[in-house]
Structures are given as structure tokens and as C-alpha cells.
Image 1: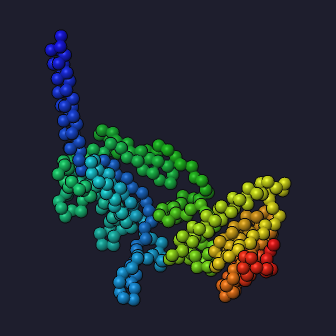
Image 2 (image 1 turned 90 degrees about the vertical axis):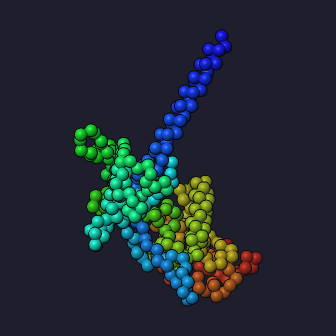
Image 3 (image 1 turned 180 degrees about the vertical axis):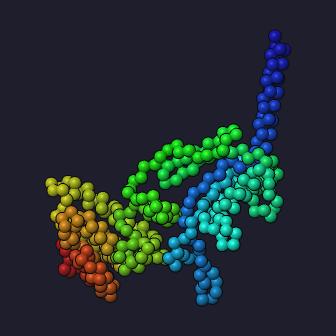
Length: 331
């Protein structure tokens, strides 16, 4: 009959409603509590503001060669709240003899356990504050990643917590452990990229594109990217053309740049081809490059740069002329 079916339906609806209510209550209890805490070692440079002649602050600068300081960059994820990021310096404070890492972790654990959570404690609370902190730490698992491997946190009742190796890393180089510890370049945000040309190449420095550290000078980042991309594209074209030849590589390559301007692309391509194909034949002169531009003063300047750069650029020269004019070109 229809009546009993209606009763069962109402009972099912009530059961679903109770389950939804219970779920919302459980979610609300978790709101603002720690969900996941992760961290990584990074090198951070302190930004120093420069001043203009009028005394106004301009963009921050870190061109003083400072290698930066080692930090733990912690990301704190909360239940139903906005993530929080903290940078803790690894070196000890001269007065307290504590590191920011130690202090930061102490605040995390004390907060999670319901202690030291007043407004002035500096505790890393979510935007919901301490209203739901009730002393339940609730750590379920932990993971420590080092240069040697990945260690899992072992938590057992009535036993001391410990980290045990779960995955061993295989080194890709022959560096000793002490060398790997001292070499912090892999922690920097400015990580080296796989590019055709070294950003610290001498010709880049002579042309005013980068400094001795390989960092683009102010306003030249786009020019550096353009040179790298141009060399990559033309280099692939040369490789494809070489694959159609009977020999393994061309015995001589000639490049001409019509309307070369200051020669950023001309220097870049000449350097790339000379290093790649010149090394195959043990002869840098296997690559000849010429730039043509109508501005005599500019031609004189960049020819001087090419001469100062030494043997690799002896087969690079620039001449004054126009694209449609008659001149002593390579062709």
C-alpha cells in the first residue's frame, strides 16, 4: 500500500538530513584548525630600496651581490580557511640564541595544543582566530625530504616518534655530502634554466645585456629572452638542414644579418654556432658572420666590441651599408 511507502520515504529523508547536519557540525569544528604544514629551504635576498634625486623610493634593488640568507619557507594550510606563508631565517638570533625556525615551530605546536594563543603571541592563526583551538594536535603523519632520501614520521602509541628512511635518492653527480650541503645554489628562487647561451657570456656583458652574475641589467630581460629564443629557433633550423647533408655536419656556415642594429642577435647566433659547429671541426673559423647596418658610428662601436672579445669572434664583422646596396658582403 501507498501509506507505508510514504513513511519509509520520510524516514530516509530525515536520516539524510541528520547526516548532513552532522557533517556540517564536524566541518565547523575543524574550521581554522591546521590541515597541513609543509616547508622547504630557500635562499632569499633582502630587497633594498633605492632613492631618486628627489628622495622618493623606487623599485627594490638587490644588485649589491648579496648571496642572500637561508630560510625555511613554511606553508600552513587550514581547514576551511585561507593558507598562510611564513619565511623563517635559519641562522640564530644573536640575542635569543634561537632561530626563527625554532620559534616558528614552537608557536605552531603551542597553538595547536591550545596554549599561548592570545592576540599578542604571534601565533600563526587563521582568519578565524583561536575560537576553535581546543588542544587537539591531531598530527597523523609527517615527511622529511633531504638530499639523501625521504623519511617518514613513525607515530606509535607509547613510543617515541622517529623518522625512518622510506625512499633513498640516487645522486646524479659525484659531489660529496659536505659539498652538497655547502652548495646552496639549488635553493635559490633564481634557478638556472636550460638555455642555449650562458646569460653571463662576455658578449652579453659587453653589449650591456647582463652583468657578471648572468642577471639581466635593468630593462634588458626581454632582450635576453629574445636572444635565447632566436638562437634556439635558428639552431634547430641549422640542425634540420645538417641532417639532410651527406656529412655529419657542415664544414662551413655563413650568416649575414641585414639591418643588424646593435647586433644583439648577431653576436648571440655567432657565439652559439661557433661553440657548437666550431668545436666539431676544432676550428672556430668554420662559422663566418656579418652584420650590415647603415649607421657608421654604431658599426664602429660593435666592431670594436667584437675585436675585444677575442678568438671566437674574429670571424664576426660588421659593415656599413643598406639591404639593397652593393657592399663587400659574405655573399
